[in-house]
Image (cartoon, rainbow, N blue to C red; front, side):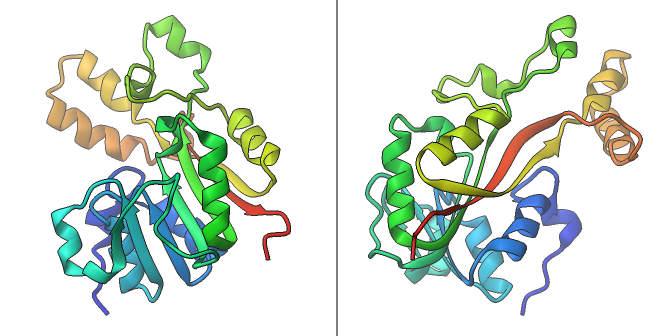
Length: 220
């Protein structure tokens, strides 16, 4: 089995998010579909760690050629898979783009038997953002047509028959980088120091994303 360089590929930010992997290992079944998989980072990681993983996205990525049988072109409203094909469906940073959330949830539950694991941008802004004249980048991303707080995403899933199994805030903002940069410290140095400071447990954390595990009632 190929060893993953954790420092390079896994963390709070980047292609593979550690908090997501932890929840997958704790809650997911062995057969997993990544909807909106992009270049397939999670699919490749999961395959290398013993999972039967597959990916689907609206456009083919050249990196799929490494495992062509594990990827398909399709969309979340009409997934190209048979009923109950997977134990778990993961969908990371997808729901903020969708114009028909009920249909997406119905289609995900059609192909899964166990649960779903999804993440969305966190749109709960602390008062300090208003006082500082700041906002999260995803608040001004024009492709984001849905904006979720923690209560919003939980209510959405529960409304359409899901039971919440786990909920967490993930991907802490490195506000230290902004503070250091504002004092004319070059960005590369500010980023390096900020990354170290952000790991200090006494720091107050502000998180950019929400992560949810949910199972569909009477899905078996």
